[in-house]
Image (cartoon, rainbow, N blue to C red):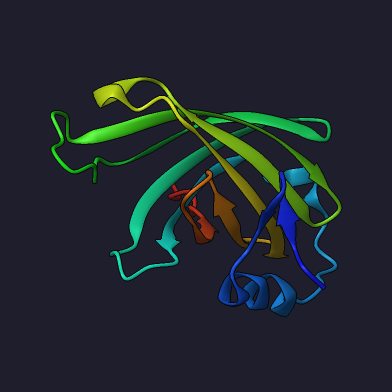
Length: 143
């Protein structure tokens, strides 16, 4: 079985990650809020931390991300992107399109699964690069 996204065949390591996801009885109806996590490249690069803010409307959501600027010659400390996606059961998919900060305007495609009420794991790609990601729901501080 080969896993493809827009005609792309994922590497065996990425495919193994996708196939190792368990099923969860967590309903995807309430993923709104702030999530912190990392995305990992399939090569030896360092993981990149990012924050995802999600606003849910029925089975669709929109939001934004922020992350450190890890481009080769950064002129700004952070990159920002708009996010739009869908939720179906435990499956989560979204597109992250950078807003032009430091010249970054590409779109990254994410496919994941809610593995616990406070955790999403999955894979990402944008053409020549691919990897995995994990997100944990940020706890709301008690007042």
